[in-house]
Image (tube, rainbow, N blue to C red):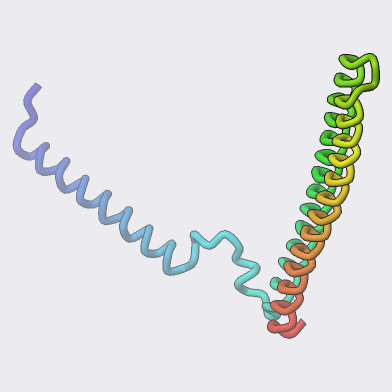
Length: 147
């Protein structure tokens, strides 16, 4: 079916009107802040309370990261020690007469366990230092906002 001249003109005008209406609606929404996700935060008479709440959230997240990191560090330390014990036990089973290889395996096991404990404590200290720096930065920002 072929459209006649008037129907084509009517459809063209309708498309232009729909486009113009859409543009006007978008401008009105932007003008009135319709796309703003948190209107109550913008209308808050005390803006430093928002920063304080965010600061508390960041501090809570830093504590969560700290505890998770320490758990991971301790878990890794125990796995390293467990692997060192397994390797020493394999050498012990392979060498029945208690020769040089068995003695070296026991020394290596002790050295690996010692290094694992030292590395774990150094890493935990670094995690504590990093998280304290984050908390200090949050406190400085909160102080800058007057709370």
